[in-house]
Length: 210
Image (cartoon, rainbow, N blue to C red):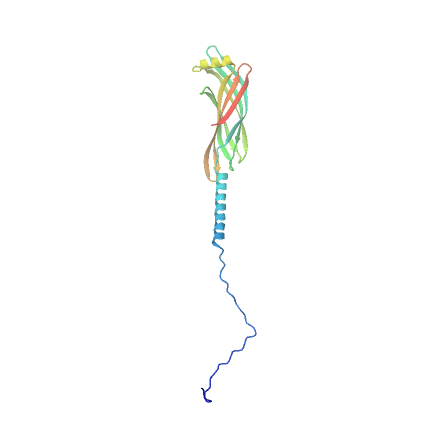
């Protein structure tokens, strides 16, 4: 029990503020790990796709060669004084550049053979094919007085059948200007041409890349 002389001190209560600024600090937002992994995957996949697309577009390719026209000028087998062959072909060759850079070719060579044996060839001058464009080259192969020695029996047999098979080969050698580099390219095409010596016409023609 306290006496009258005993007393207790109380501190005054601070006044209630009429206005107060409250600052709330929020933690940094981190996206869920799954969403972040999906975004990283999409970025990586896009980069890889762009790389392979650029590689596909810029990678040099050999030119496409197509014989658009073959005309038989004449074919004749001479029996005197020895068995010789006179032959003349005119060809129109299409050279298509599939790359996105121009193609400079030094020459176009057309050869003709009989049963795997080369009889002769002709070479044309070089030129340039623009990117993703085509160029046409005409060539005439004349072979006169070629003496047939090894294949005389086959030739006589083909003459009796009325069809002589010849094989032609077309080759283009060139360079592709890729920035500061020169990349050698080559295109080759082989054709089997069957001619009728009686009416001087081409019976059949089959071509395929080499």
